[in-house]
Image (cartoon, rainbow, N blue to C red; front, side, top):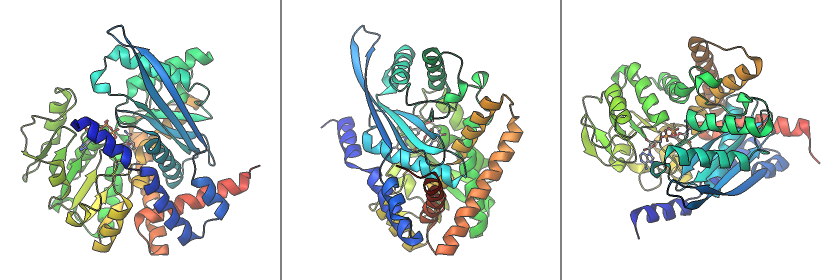
Length: 425
Ligand code: NAD
């Protein structure tokens, strides 16, 4: 079987939605969550599938599959990114949507959770093909999306350009310019200053709060960062600025180790001039992604994708602190191994909430027409992240549980209030 086929099959066999349910079960039991609320949380509230015929540059038509899952609107309109990937499937999007529900509640943002995905390989598509596909997806989801209904944003392999196409197509279909229907837009179309760095910056803030609690001095610590896209590279840049030595970085093409510290600026420049990948970078020794995860470091930031830390490698992990920039990088079995070892894991639904926080600021700015400076955005976002961190930390102390389960408990407590006070049929 070809490697890419095998990887796709492996990805299909993984079920991140089940991983989400396992954590939900533990949190629900500890906090004695209302059984009706538990049943509601276990299922997405809406799952929309679309098939999109798109004319390719060679004149042939290719049919793509797309999804949008709305997990919950209990606390407000649903919010969540759109992922373009060969591997994206229904289970993955369902899990990602549920994590958005919990993430927004952890960050105290009045949103529910959603996620979208298109099964495609954007690295093999032209800009024109990507534009036609994005417009076809917007057309298919026009009645799902809405400023007060469901608000997409970037995720893996999507960014400001895709968001601009969504705004344009949505605005044309509905009549009237509607920038608030997506976040993560280019600045000139109503995007927020600070949004492109917000997730990585938030990962850094969560890391600094955790290190302070653990008595770790950033200037004396070494870090490894998996994934060198938006989240990974910005996290690494902010870690470096705080004095951490980044000894390893990776992406899906290569991983590099340098005990003297990798120059992150150089790595970013190299990636930007090398079709977005770090393969061939000269700033470190070539290692495998597996080696990166088990290096002798203090902090490990998985910022790539799901199911990277599993029962197969968790026991070998040496980092004292794991901060999840990616969504779902650690399986439930790995969590148990890490918690027994005393490794502190700052979970995705807390650690990478900086992105959705600034998305919420962007949406507010679009609605009010009043725009903030980058400093204002960063100061406000840092404050929200610190607050969320301490809310979860205190919950973990109160219930004597891990930061992950505490984050679920904190989020579920708020969602329970929302569901109970709104009621249902
Ligand atoms: P991106 O597409 O910009 O970057 C993804 C990076 O991961 C790339 O460098 C890619 O090469 C690398 N990668 C993919 N597979 C890998 C593998 N097996 N091993 C090592 N590296 C691998 O995406 P992103 O926006 O940085 O998102 C990364 C993660 O963060 C995803 O889980 C996403 O859901 C999550 N996230 C993103 C945001 C955001 O604002 N962009 C917010 C919250 C969470």
